[in-house]
Amino acid sequence: MPQPILRSDRLLMVPLADRHLELEVRLDSDPEVLRYIFGRARSRDEVLTSHAGRLRLAQKVDGLGFWMAFGTDGGARGSARPERETDGDFVGLMMLPPAHGPDQPDDPTVAELGYRLLRDCWGRGLASEASRVLLRHAFDTVGQRRVIAQTMTVNAGSRRVMEAVGLRYVRTFYPSWDDPLPDTEQGEVEYEMTREMWQAMTAPTSAG
Image (cartoon, rainbow, N blue to C red):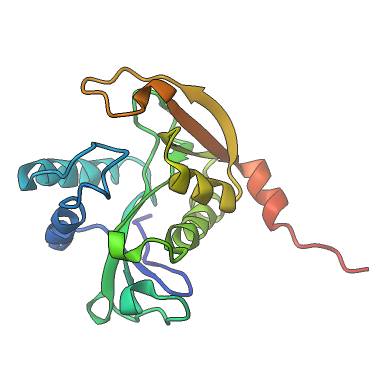
């Protein structure tokens, strides 16, 4: 099953492809966007390496991978979803690859949820909106057993998104950092949603 195009009310989410490389470069050129990931902007060569790695990772489990999100007027509240990516504005990179990090399980039934938005698109609820679509895809289409999300403990914005879409806190952990960022001494946090949690959250309520 190849990665499908995904849609929300405001976003068109297109599977990552080579034609999107320059948009990834643009996204990673803002150090604030990468504040809790790398602590700095990334060079074009670094983004090129990441791009190739993402495309490889997207081949590991059918249906999982990375999506480039497009919206109308930058996904402004109340805006309509563009019908084609060429009709919309690039908003950010939405991620649902197989779990693959050093502090993640080597298990094809576990996916990792992530989101990276252009700074101009922050504060519009787009990460939460995209995450709900990705969770539905993970459980209802791909059939994943579990979805995890990880971020620095101090990344309050990302944690709010995780909590808003129904993920629960699992643990705080302290990875080995080659080049520690500020506040790494507070560690990283992991949240999760299991298939059982998803089914309970999306089960229809009985009337009367």
